[in-house]
Amino acid sequence: RRVLLTGANGFIGSHILTQLLDHGFNVCCAVRTRAKGDQILKDFAAQQSQIAITVVPDIVAPNAYHAAVQGTPSFDTVYHTASPFTYQNVENNLQFLEPAIKGTLNLLKAVKDHAPSVKRVVWTGSCASVVDYDHLVSDPPKLYTEEDWNPIAWEEAVHGDPSKAYRASKLFAEREAWAFVDKEKPHYDLVTICPPATFGPLRHSITSIENLNESNARLWRFCFSSTEDAPMPYMPVHTYVDVRDLAYAQFQAMMVPEAGNQRFAVSARQFSFQEVCDILRSRFPELNHRTPLGKPGTSSLPPGAYSIDNSKVKSLLGVEFRSLEETVVDVARCLLDIERNE
Ligand code: NDP
Image (cartoon, rainbow, N blue to C red):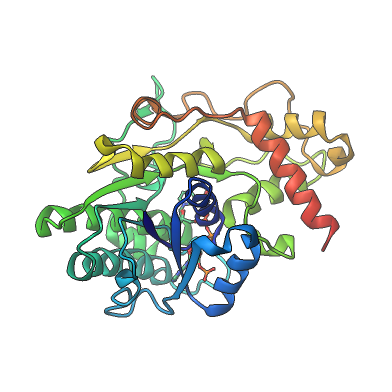
């Protein structure tokens, strides 16, 4: 079986690639430049024979994916993860919105028009399209499910702060994807995977902490390179998933027939930075001077903080989530190693 995977050089993309290769699939990786493809071949040197590279320089351009989807032998499944999620060099909110939305539609259309063998498209969204970030706490606390949609409006997305633009890029891209399938009735089905904050060790190589992907970079900034007396950081994202569990969910999204035309919120559980810092301080005492102390043994989430129901992911996709401790310890080992070798 053959799979096309966009964004294969990214944090999440490279873990999906790991799952696919380890299960014996051949994978064509769509990336922006030849150099990024060469890096994938280096990072996965032992499995090179299962990998092909295709270069898609601009996912917004009309017909961007026409050539990429027509690989030989033909594809059974297409994964789409390529979408902007770094705040570096962003001058305009449309830099999030356009590639997310147009990239998605270009791909869905290309598969419809030029890839008749594809049975399923697995699309990486975000819990940003599920959670209402203007109402993070309530009494009783809100339990989000796959039925919920972030009510953010287009105007806010275009004129709000960049984090709103990022969240909205995931919301509007997912809405457009479902609308496309609804209207065009293509020969394939769609699965959307919506993760919250995703943490975990890297599978792709980077030479410097500066080049960390956005979600791990936040963990680094708040918990690994702060001070003992710093206030405990707060983010509106109250739930997380380990990237390896997310990648397994993505793999299962292809394998499980009943997953077709379903949306999955792949969240392990609530977390707070206090818990992350407690784990770091107990397992890596050498970090104590750069990890906030806060109030050990408590949660730093506000009372009434929302959470996300993962029962559908567990029952339909068969995912079991590892502990926060395992995730934090493995991230720490990976990131401290990168720091040592900078
Ligand atoms: P990375 O930044 O590590 O990876 C992003 C990938 O998308 C890279 O391959 C990148 O290519 C590609 N990409 C970004 N912008 C563009 C663009 N304008 N045109 C073409 N390709 C582009 O981030 P993640 O792995 O974390 O993110 C992957 C997906 O997961 C995204 O869709 C993101 O929204 C989603 N997600 C991530 C979460 C997280 O916490 N990490 C949580 C929820 C959803 P290049 O290397 O060339 O820039």
